[in-house]
Image: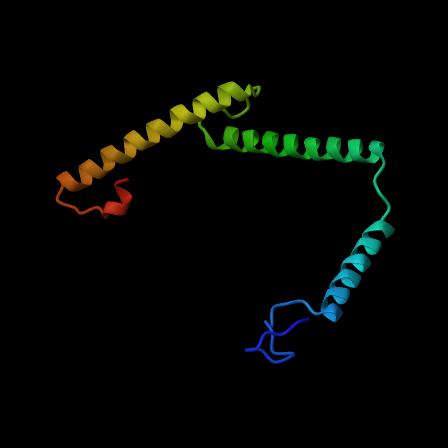
Length: 121
């Protein structure tokens, strides 16, 4: 390390890596890589099985969501489940609920009541 006239030896930039810190960083990285190499790698068959299991879990979550909708939306209980039909009827039901809410807000205001603006959305 050469020092300029304005610097004294050892007064350089504190962020510069010294040989000992650079060696420590390489050693730490090497140790982490060695630890990762100690882990057994998954075979292609294990990867495939993990993917299949993840996909089954995702599909099950979707099925449970549709089942929940059939419990919440009137007229869907006990019917065979077509996902398209469930979504369509859910949207129709929600739109109807919004119209009913707006009508209720108008009735309250016509009767002289006040409705907090956050409930008018």
